[in-house]
Image 1 (cartoon, rainbow, N blue to C red):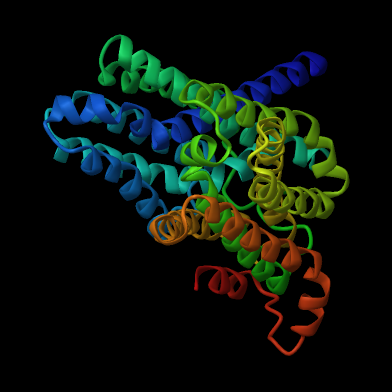
Image 2: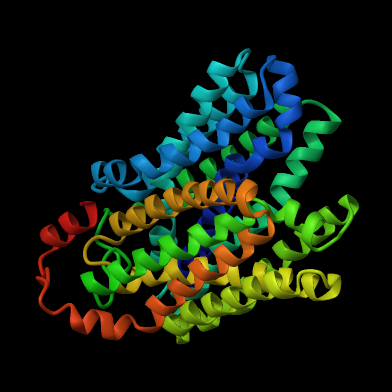
Length: 408
């Protein structure tokens, strides 16, 4: 009987991890899906392309603004109950989005989804990590974040294709179905542990100064990423000289490289978590500088785009994993703060690119991105020195104080 119970417990934990991964896929795909369905939504709802594009903008801004306050407000709710509620909101909001007769109701559905996304992103990684021993934490985080890359490589293109074959509403209904499956599994199988008592609820080596360095590096690197990524299609055609037919395969190459990096990078996250963060940040800066200098060579550009994708996904995952090591309070609140910085940085990068485009051309976006990511690399490489020089600042030791510094 003990062996049978243990086997059942392992199956439940494995199924719960799979459900969290599917839910992550759903949220990330939903976030970006309007990009591929812009013309269909605009035509159906009799509105402009730019207005539909704001669905993505408002989604990101909502996540950035509410992540920390909502996570703090829900931090005492047991995780199974909280995640079930968040996925219920996702399912209902996705149905509203799919059936919306006008733009206003579609926007309302998007904002409701973003509210659930803000809290989900803060607790999903911590919850997944607590399902398994600390020794495999990095691999678990890589699995969850792998869903983000798969959402970009497969989810958005598949949703776009599905919308083109039928209507854009069918694409949202398909995600609703996947979200409902994840909801049922989490409600039935996720262990109902009290919030804040698992081994991943508090960092292994809490340090407010190192966490501050992480937030600065996140802001710099993600702003750089967004500056380059927002205008990738223009860069591929105008600088690299590829035809429009090559856009899809090249974007797939970049995304597939990210999936491959996470498939092989989980062990590195466990054994060398800091190196797993610094190395891809340096490689990402190198790829961006390379695209700026050697962009006219199509073969080199294709290789650099693959390096870009691999380094990008490993860096983002490693930074999220780092929160579990240095968060100065509850890891879910710290993850929410990082998520807020992440989403605000995406908006900032898009703005920088928009300012550079008419003034310096799309070629300049790669250089600006490379400089920003290089600055992030420098902060991460000098983390120990920066932390040691910050001894003059208070070292918050109690959980309450550490939560306050994260939320400020």
